[in-house]
Length: 80
Image: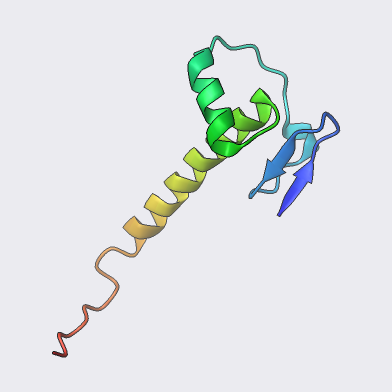
């Protein structure tokens, strides 16, 4: 599921209120940005950076979910 900000940025996965989008000025490695653009097949650098940040947050959510279930899932018996 995706939405578009008025600037044309595609917002993926998470519900982001438009008031949460801010203009930022950072010094970033251009080679990393180009690589992210290729990996994500994004049209803009902003879209690539946004998707990369979303992936970091998604991975952290997965880690938290796995940690919260640690030891709570019963082990499976060997059938064969």
